[in-house]
Image 1 (cartoon, rainbow, N blue to C red):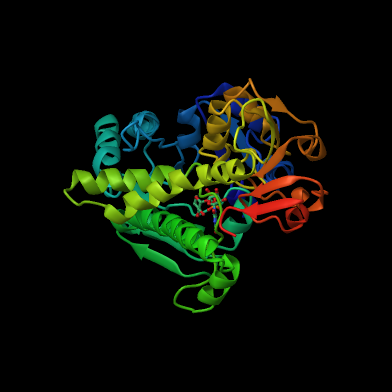
Image 2 (spheres, protein in one colour):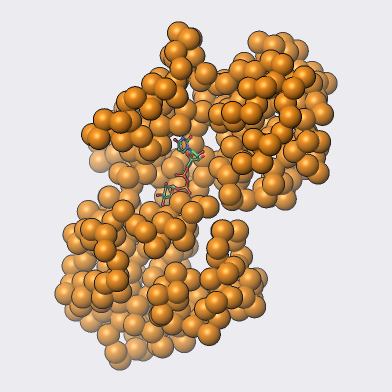
Length: 405
Ligand code: UDX
């Protein structure tokens, strides 16, 4: 949609007819602030189809945005990528004009020039970088602020191996003033993983230090404020709490671990980044039990189910291990989230869902798991509150404890 906003004609292709229909009727199939408005504004420049043939014949560039989920061993599952590339290769065979295939999906370094290139060449009978362009252009968008991140990027990474792809991508992004990193395809792919792995490391670091600060009575937030002012360090992504979730950090760190092991490197640091992140949410329940030791049949209010505010996405949400543990302890959970309750209900139909945040406060104790703005408006007086995300107003609880503060 952002490319359409820049004035380009965009075809959306998906194998899921529900998504094609939704986009075709001007409805975004995912929740993202500002996206519906962008769809409405650019209706004339977009079309949605399940027909890869038409979408490739009538365009210059194909961005492959297929998902790359985790296999059970942490490596990435390329099934969707492979299937999309087979379809694309098939059409390239019949297309006379030059076409460029750009991998936007997050794939491990070596994937584009490896399996992706092989499938495209096999299906098309053509040669990459000569008969068609092939490039990597990873995305760095955060859910909830994706449009802002697209239009004001810190950098744009362009991995190329042929001059035409290079020129077309430079032209596509010519209106952006940020630095453009033009590099090889494997480096571009690696930049994406290393960015996410580093940010995940920063968060696990902030949580480990936060755990120390909590035990020593030192204010964690002030520590990171002081630390972040060093320009070599920077203050972003130092918010201690119950750890990182979402569709990227957990999956990408696991994939990098799996790649490291496959090339004979022991990724000690990365493994501990995941280890800290798995333990951190359970600390919230440990703290709760220091106030309410026996959770059996106790009513526990859970504020927040999305993996972070401003999204309905619950993938790898830290609320999931917390609910698991509460159920194991026999607690009755009443949960509230402004956007994510429908998604969470599919995973946990057995828990109660409150119709408002106030209703979820009607419990023996409250856990805060996502920092939604509306949680700053609640009256926590008379409550036992255990906070995983740093909601200032919750300090008004009769009992208040933060996971790292
Ligand atoms: C991330 C990257 O930021 C983005 O560049 C990439 O393209 C996709 O993955 P996203 O998953 O949308 O984006 O969320 P992000 O805002 O990075 O937060 C991820 C998780 O880390 C959330 O669960 C959040 O609560 C947590 N987090 C973030 C912290 O616990 N502390 C912080 O200081 C920052």
